[in-house]
Image 1: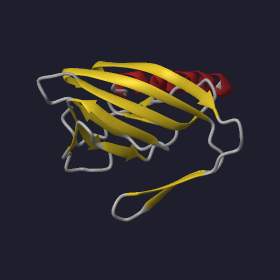
Image 2: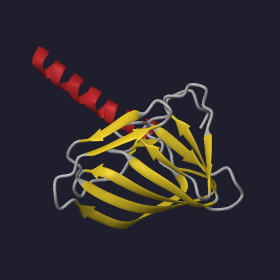
Image 3: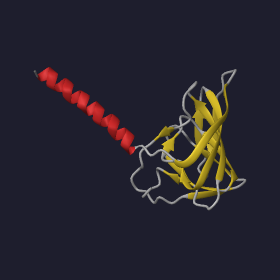
Length: 164
Protein backbone atom coordinates (compact mmCIF):
# COMPACT_ATOMS: atom_id res chain seq x y z
CA UNK A 1 0.00 0.00 0.00
CA UNK A 2 2.82 2.43 0.92
CA UNK A 3 4.66 1.83 -2.39
CA UNK A 4 1.45 2.35 -4.35
CA UNK A 5 0.77 5.67 -2.54
CA UNK A 6 4.33 6.87 -3.16
CA UNK A 7 4.04 5.92 -6.84
CA UNK A 8 0.75 7.85 -7.22
CA UNK A 9 2.17 10.88 -5.42
CA UNK A 10 5.27 10.79 -7.64
CA UNK A 11 3.16 10.64 -10.78
CA UNK A 12 0.98 13.52 -9.51
CA UNK A 13 4.08 15.60 -8.70
CA UNK A 14 5.55 15.01 -12.17
CA UNK A 15 2.25 15.92 -13.82
CA UNK A 16 2.00 19.10 -11.73
CA UNK A 17 5.58 20.02 -12.61
CA UNK A 18 4.88 19.50 -16.30
CA UNK A 19 1.72 21.62 -16.18
CA UNK A 20 3.44 24.32 -14.10
CA UNK A 21 6.32 24.46 -16.59
CA UNK A 22 3.86 25.08 -19.40
CA UNK A 23 2.04 27.77 -17.41
CA UNK A 24 5.25 29.53 -16.32
CA UNK A 25 6.90 29.52 -19.75
CA UNK A 26 6.53 32.80 -21.61
CA UNK A 27 6.45 32.26 -25.37
CA UNK A 28 6.73 35.32 -27.59
CA UNK A 29 3.93 37.45 -28.94
CA UNK A 30 4.05 39.19 -32.30
CA UNK A 31 7.47 37.67 -33.06
CA UNK A 32 8.15 35.34 -35.98
CA UNK A 33 11.51 33.64 -36.46
CA UNK A 34 12.54 32.02 -39.74
CA UNK A 35 15.63 29.81 -39.87
CA UNK A 36 17.56 30.88 -42.97
CA UNK A 37 20.54 28.52 -42.68
CA UNK A 38 21.79 25.65 -40.53
CA UNK A 39 25.08 23.77 -40.72
CA UNK A 40 27.37 21.57 -38.67
CA UNK A 41 31.06 22.40 -38.43
CA UNK A 42 33.03 20.09 -40.72
CA UNK A 43 36.07 20.17 -38.40
CA UNK A 44 36.27 20.38 -34.60
CA UNK A 45 35.84 24.01 -33.49
CA UNK A 46 36.73 25.60 -30.14
CA UNK A 47 35.16 29.06 -29.80
CA UNK A 48 36.07 31.66 -27.17
CA UNK A 49 34.42 35.08 -27.06
CA UNK A 50 35.29 37.89 -24.64
CA UNK A 51 32.24 40.06 -24.03
CA UNK A 52 31.49 43.20 -22.04
CA UNK A 53 33.46 45.59 -19.89
CA UNK A 54 34.62 42.74 -17.65
CA UNK A 55 35.72 40.57 -20.60
CA UNK A 56 33.42 37.69 -19.67
CA UNK A 57 34.76 34.65 -21.51
CA UNK A 58 32.20 32.52 -23.30
CA UNK A 59 33.72 29.17 -24.11
CA UNK A 60 32.30 26.61 -26.52
CA UNK A 61 34.90 23.81 -26.55
CA UNK A 62 33.28 21.61 -29.20
CA UNK A 63 30.80 23.70 -31.19
CA UNK A 64 27.96 21.78 -32.78
CA UNK A 65 25.42 23.20 -35.26
CA UNK A 66 25.36 26.87 -36.18
CA UNK A 67 22.00 28.39 -37.11
CA UNK A 68 21.14 31.73 -38.74
CA UNK A 69 17.65 33.08 -38.10
CA UNK A 70 15.72 36.16 -39.20
CA UNK A 71 13.29 37.43 -36.54
CA UNK A 72 10.55 39.96 -37.22
CA UNK A 73 8.87 41.53 -34.17
CA UNK A 74 5.68 43.55 -34.61
CA UNK A 75 5.23 46.88 -32.81
CA UNK A 76 4.54 46.05 -29.16
CA UNK A 77 5.65 42.43 -29.68
CA UNK A 78 8.19 40.48 -27.68
CA UNK A 79 10.25 37.31 -27.78
CA UNK A 80 9.04 35.94 -24.45
CA UNK A 81 11.50 34.98 -21.73
CA UNK A 82 13.90 32.44 -23.20
CA UNK A 83 17.46 31.15 -23.30
CA UNK A 84 19.77 29.57 -25.89
CA UNK A 85 21.99 26.47 -25.72
CA UNK A 86 25.09 28.44 -26.73
CA UNK A 87 26.17 32.01 -27.47
CA UNK A 88 24.12 34.05 -29.95
CA UNK A 89 25.23 37.05 -32.00
CA UNK A 90 22.34 39.40 -32.85
CA UNK A 91 22.31 42.23 -35.43
CA UNK A 92 19.52 44.80 -35.57
CA UNK A 93 18.71 45.52 -39.23
CA UNK A 94 15.42 47.40 -38.81
CA UNK A 95 13.67 49.14 -35.93
CA UNK A 96 14.77 48.86 -32.32
CA UNK A 97 14.99 45.98 -29.83
CA UNK A 98 15.02 46.53 -26.07
CA UNK A 99 16.72 43.64 -24.29
CA UNK A 100 15.87 42.67 -20.69
CA UNK A 101 18.28 40.51 -18.70
CA UNK A 102 16.84 37.82 -16.45
CA UNK A 103 19.65 38.52 -13.95
CA UNK A 104 18.82 42.24 -13.59
CA UNK A 105 16.29 42.73 -10.76
CA UNK A 106 15.76 46.38 -11.71
CA UNK A 107 14.12 45.22 -14.98
CA UNK A 108 15.77 48.00 -16.97
CA UNK A 109 16.05 47.24 -20.68
CA UNK A 110 18.97 48.06 -22.98
CA UNK A 111 17.87 49.43 -26.39
CA UNK A 112 19.66 48.40 -29.59
CA UNK A 113 18.97 50.16 -32.89
CA UNK A 114 19.68 49.66 -36.57
CA UNK A 115 23.34 48.89 -37.20
CA UNK A 116 24.01 47.73 -33.64
CA UNK A 117 24.84 44.20 -32.53
CA UNK A 118 25.16 42.36 -29.24
CA UNK A 119 26.23 38.96 -27.97
CA UNK A 120 23.99 36.90 -25.72
CA UNK A 121 26.02 34.50 -23.62
CA UNK A 122 23.57 31.66 -24.12
CA UNK A 123 24.26 28.64 -21.95
CA UNK A 124 20.92 29.06 -20.14
CA UNK A 125 21.10 32.89 -19.77
CA UNK A 126 17.45 34.04 -19.52
CA UNK A 127 16.40 37.21 -21.37
CA UNK A 128 13.54 38.86 -23.29
CA UNK A 129 13.51 41.23 -26.29
CA UNK A 130 10.73 43.79 -26.79
CA UNK A 131 9.82 46.03 -29.68
CA UNK A 132 8.71 49.25 -28.00
CA UNK A 133 8.70 51.20 -31.27
CA UNK A 134 5.84 51.88 -33.66
CA UNK A 135 7.48 49.95 -36.53
CA UNK A 136 8.56 46.37 -37.16
CA UNK A 137 11.91 45.31 -35.77
CA UNK A 138 14.11 42.92 -37.70
CA UNK A 139 16.92 41.01 -36.03
CA UNK A 140 19.34 38.52 -37.61
CA UNK A 141 20.82 36.07 -35.14
CA UNK A 142 23.64 33.55 -35.48
CA UNK A 143 23.38 30.85 -32.83
CA UNK A 144 26.49 28.90 -31.93
CA UNK A 145 26.52 25.43 -30.39
CA UNK A 146 22.98 24.33 -31.15
CA UNK A 147 22.40 20.60 -30.59
CA UNK A 148 22.29 18.80 -33.98
CA UNK A 149 18.73 19.17 -35.25
CA UNK A 150 17.75 20.85 -31.96
CA UNK A 151 16.04 24.11 -31.14
CA UNK A 152 17.85 27.46 -30.96
CA UNK A 153 15.79 28.51 -27.92
CA UNK A 154 14.13 27.28 -24.76
CA UNK A 155 11.08 29.07 -23.37
CA UNK A 156 11.73 30.15 -19.77
CA UNK A 157 9.66 31.46 -16.87
CA UNK A 158 9.52 35.16 -16.07
CA UNK A 159 12.27 35.72 -13.48
CA UNK A 160 9.66 37.40 -11.31
CA UNK A 161 10.77 41.01 -11.10
CA UNK A 162 9.51 42.24 -14.47
CA UNK A 163 5.79 42.94 -14.97
CA UNK A 164 5.81 41.38 -18.45
